[in-house]
Length: 268
Image 1 (tube, rainbow, N blue to C red):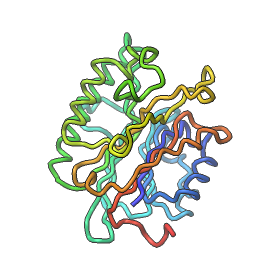
Image 2: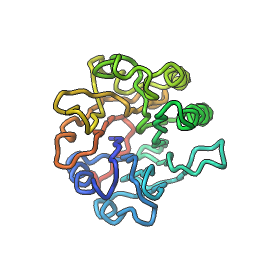
Image 3: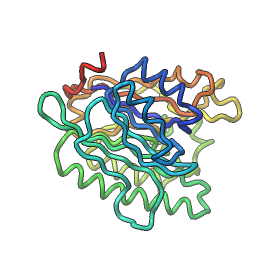
């Protein structure tokens, strides 16, 4: 089963690129972040015509997440529990039955950026991460293949950015953020990229200062796997070439292949 995550930075601006990538890669399940539209305006027909079932949790103008799946959705959950006053659209989760009679649970998130750290945005990020920790802890108790993926807006280590000194102190790379990242991973999750390579690997290049041309990148898009999913990990690919396409997102897709017997005949 091929499962991928991609912050597309606006479905209207990136629709052609997303469809081109889907046609080339044919993931079984894909999570998109920053769709930046309400549910009713998501161009679902474009994806349904390619054999995808579509579920979104949208928001006008910013945020918003979507799950595309060649497998039917058994269950869909929207929003991160723990704060009824939080209306930001940042999480959608699907449960799917696989061809061998098992299930897989895939949760797609767009974790808050948190900048500037002096504003209310940083406490919101940290609070969101506390709620995510509780959410994931409960999911892991189910002891099933579980993939938590998306744009985490977190640089795990200095090895995951072109220059740690440039990024240190940013909401993406400071002690409070990293402590909560470690607490999350230490619940028993496996970082799919780091499980397969120790090389420097980036998933985001800013639009400013020639970052793409200079390879001034960071790794903030992640796939975290429960033990039951990590045992089935076959490989990971970062689609770096997509950043060089016409009118690209500042992020690129990250794909994990897992032996979950979920690939349908439609994916051929």
